[in-house]
Image (cartoon, rainbow, N blue to C red; front, side, top):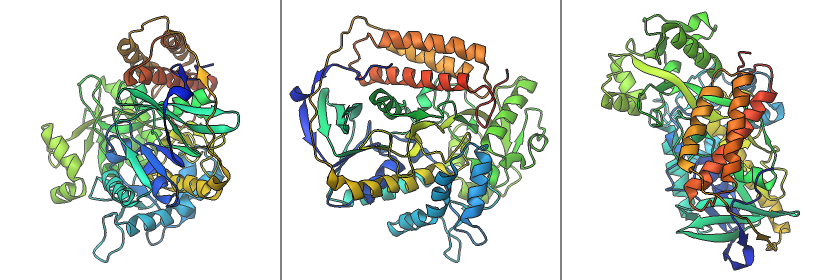
Amino acid sequence: MPLRYLNGFDIDKLKKETCDVIVIGSGVAGLYSAINLDRDLKVLIISKETLAENNSYLAQGGIAAAVAEGDMPEYHFEDTIKAGAGACDEAAVKVLVQQAPRDIEMLCSIGTNFDRNPDGTLTTTREGGHRRFRIVHALGDATGREVFDSLLRECKKRSNISILENCFAVDIVSDPKGCKGLIVKIEGEYRYIASKALILASGGVGQVYKNTTNAAVITGDGMAMAYRAGAELTNMEFVQFHPTAMYSTAAYENKFLISEAVRGEGGILRNTEGKRFMPEYHEMAEVAPRDIVARAIFTEMRKTGSPFVYLDVTHKDPEFIKTRFPNIYKHCLKEGIDITKEYIPVCPVQHYFMGGIRTDLWGQTNIKGLYACGEAANTGVHGANRLASNSLLEGLVYGRRCAEKINSTVAEVNLEQPEIQYKRENISAADTSGIRESIKNLMNDHAGIERNGKDMSMALRKVNEYIALLEKDSLDSPEDMETLNIAYIASLILKGAIRRKTSIGSHYRID
């Protein structure tokens, strides 16, 4: 069993604040849940660093929704189920696809500037695993940033919503009756924030891996807090590796994503010998589901002995490329590559997490008063492999549903401060930065695109040794606490992957 709390405390001696609902996370899921909460509820949004430090802000491709002529939620459902390799919760997927148009409409109503056709209809594109053009996008390849900005503007209009930046969420406070609030560290001081409900929208697990597209703040904190509080975490073995991050030799640099929409608009994958290879692996070629494309690239890299393959858009109209993918074009140009004339070196890296805190169709966990949405949650919609551009969508649909459930039940909840004195003896001083680096390497090498039981068991033993060291350490800085969170999540991923003997979706065993 993990530590219940990262640090010892007497709740009566902590500085105390109160609110109705705490939202941990300033990405799309967190902000959208906040604006859907009743305006008479006092809502506090907590951001670990500045508000824009989240994965939503980095999202390029768009949001999947059956809004185009000729498309239907039933078609979106079929594509989602197929991409998820048969491991999706069909009821959760039905909610997702049927309610998607509603949430796109709400975003439009608050001023989200989606790209539009000359006739005013939403422009749609296609991405991996989709049989139809159904991805709505904004500012070409800056959908996440535009949606985030519009949601933040709306939050700031609401007098009932407060935002606390540079605040580290340490632990969920609970008793047998349910979730009671949160211990945070801000400005070097520990505080207790009491609440009637808590929404975990804290993102994924990117920094558990050496190479990731995720923001540096994404260290699995929300999932680790929920785990320590007794929440159920499921499907932890399902880690998605995006096929096309820009190849870089820089160590531990977060990798720049080359959106799946580039392939959806006709980009071609070639090995370093210039040969197009995806038609040999799948009938949908470059727009096959992500797990298939990532493994195909991995195989081609092994065949040629190269650490990357190429993505080719040189056959496309240069003005179209510059307009459709302005940020990708500018970033690559800064790296010395004119993508209208030269191939882009790409490779698969960790990108998304399908597992997480298990919830029902309303975002409720097994702990009363604790909700989860977005990448931190396992609603069941993604199965073993997320369909492209269903991530922002899930954050919207289930973030709203968390809010709706809280709106209908929060009046029944009384603010009660639990009587907690938690003692913890610190008897060692671990090298947390060295441990973090070692775990990231272990996960990259042994819990990646291809896996085998022997190597994963070795990695798990090592990670568990680190956990034993860290649990005895004086974890006072956020960086130290993040390291133990990373270790817990790495251990759960490895345990899940070892238990699942057969390959499915993103979980591919070579033994």
